[in-house]
Structure formats: C-alpha cells, structure tokens
Length: 362
Image 1: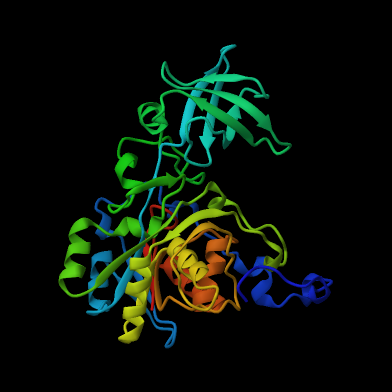
Image 2: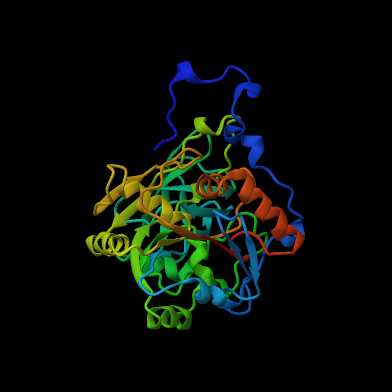
C-alpha cells in the first residue's frame, strides 16, 4: 500500500466491517491536559526519551534525550529535515479599522497570491489589510470554508518585512501567545530553508553539541527538505482512515542524501529518520521502488499496510489522538505497540506534542 486510495467495491458497508487497524476510533487515547507541553524543556537535549524496540516490544526510559548516543553506532545515518519556520502569523487592521489575524499557509513570493486562514472581523475579496508601514495585503478570493487568497504588497524581499511584523505560528493546542523564546526554540538548530508554517518537531531535541558528538562517534548526517503545512494539525475525520486525504507539502530530496542512504544500506547500517516529515519525504522518494533525487508536492499518506522501503528506525514525538502522524508511526511499529507505549508514557508523566518529549523507535 503506497497511498490512501482504495477501490469502492472493496469498501465495507458498516463500521463493524472495517478492520480494526483502519478504524479511526482505534487511534484515540485519553491524555490528561496537564501533560501537553506548553513550553520547551530548559535545554534541547534534556527532554526525556522513550526507546521502543519493535521486535522485542521492550520499552526503555531514559532521563535525557542526549542518551540516544548509546543506541547509535558508527555508520548509522541520521536524516533530518532542514526546513525553517517563517513568521507566518500576522496581526493587522482593515482600512475600516477592524482587527484581523492572518495565518499564511505558504511562504509568499512577491507578486503572487498566497493561501491563508484568518480570524477577526469579516474579510471579503477586495478588502485591504494593513500590517505595517512596509507591508499590507489585498484579499483576492474567499472560499466557503473561510480560507482566503491574499496578495501581499511590500518590498521585493517579503521575508524581511515578515520578520519585522510576523510572529511564530505556534500549534493550535499551545494555548498561549508566542514569546521571544519561541523565535529560536520553535525551530531546529539545523533549519536552513524558509518555507514551513509548522516545525519538524522531532528535531527540537538535537543541539549543535549533540549533533557534533554523534558525528565524532561516526554517525553520519544527511538532509531532506519538507516544508510543513498547517494541514499537519488537521484531524482525520473519516471513520475508515483509508478514506482520509492528506495535505500536500513541498519536498526536496538531494542527490547527496540518496547516495548517503545507498551507502548506508550497502554496509548494513541503519537509516534513521528524524521526524514523520522525514519519513514521508524519504518514502515518497522511493515509491518507484528505489530512492531517487526528487522534488515536488508530496501527498503520501502512510497508514498500516504501507511497505517501508527506506527507513530502519525513527525519532519522533508523541502525537495527537486520531492524527495522521499517530497513524504513520502505528504503520511503522504496529498500532497496539504504539498505543501501549503511549499509555506507559502517560503513566510516567511524559510531556506530549510539539514541545514535549521524544520516542526512538528501533
């Protein structure tokens, strides 16, 4: 299975006929609200680490993420997503004075409209929103769901204007305003290419010092780029998870990463994806049967039954109930094993979601 498509003739006619691994309600768990991490750990590598062994089903608990060095060997390849979150949240006013908040869904380019969400006073095509002396926007269209297309008007280098007035687009479940700390903590230390409205959060746990230590012990690093969209927070709503359609995200897989993966596998070492975004990018690049250098829009939806061709292990965070991300890690390690590990993490008071603790699936 390499996509979410299924033949209509094969679809069950009732919930009871849906195999359990494909039932949305099988991916729900109860999480105490106090375990949602609203702030990052004091230092990146000081998050806790749950180590999950797929074959033996053994679970280990480590006090600090930095202890991951004990599980990595010379010749292993860590593949990381080098996308960078841009300040996509804009506060402005309509010319009539009403306050509006805009969330850009893609990195804007001069002279090109960009999709966005908004909240505040009603917006209609033709309305102009003023963000600063240098930056304004004109609404071009609005769909029935309230999503708009807006044309930003400002300097040719729109990113410089966004950095002056924009804010970090924190996930919707972090119910607080962005703070100065978020400017660098809601970003990986290796972020290079602007384009994401949500961070590849599994990478938060790596500091520059930890990456240097891993390289010193013979672990290799390689990079892909996947610009994470706001759709990553969209819950799966279809009772049969196979009916869900995932959002598109832009991906780049460079040739040097493909070569590094090939060499790693040739020598019998592990390809370790840091984050679900990296998993999706690598497996999308290998849908032909072999990983290839590739760029374009990825809508690969990974659910149980998917054949993983590239990755051996995965570093990830703890994901929302009923989310496509929880479904992805369940496809890799098994739904029952993942949910069992989540229950153990809840019992031991791990911190969940973007700013929370980490899991290493071996």
